[in-house]
Image: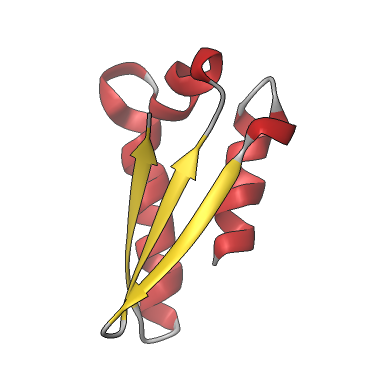
Length: 76
C-alpha cells in the first residue's frame, strides 16, 4: 500500500523525487504519512481538500480488500 500511495503522489506533483511515504503500524491499524515538497502541497491537497479526500478514500478501499484499516496523513 505504501507503493501505491507513493505512485499516486508522484503522479500528481512536480518534484516526484521529493515524495516520501512512511508506514507506521499500530495494533492492526496502518498509518501512512505522506511528505511532499512545500511547493507541491497544494497539488496533493487540491481545492477544498478534494484530492486528499479521494486519495484517502482510494487507500481505504484497497486496505479494506486486504482486511486492514488504514489512514493517510499529509504532513507539512
